Image 1: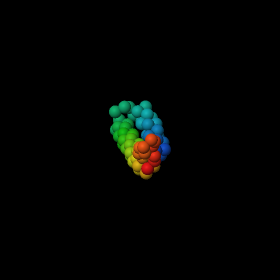
Image 2: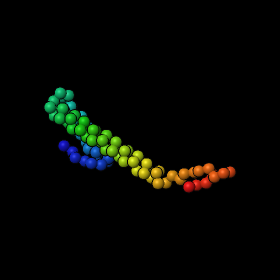
Image 3: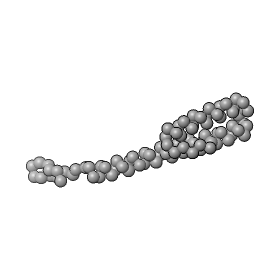
Image 4: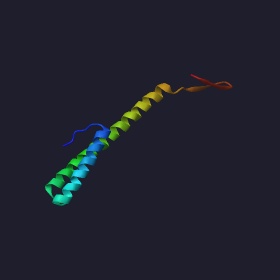
Length: 85
């Protein structure tokens, strides 16, 4: 089983398992235990890949929220015009 933890490694592993599974189907048939194991392995990698994408997205959103809180300037009305606070 592959244990990659970053995007490019998991993508490579997914493609490798897909290729192995395709070859196993051709050699042993769709319902062979080898093909079923490869299918499970592929599912696990795809799930890990989706989790990494979700975690990365959540992290980027959290970082963006942190930057926007500190970097946003507020405006208040000052009589005739607006002034930065």
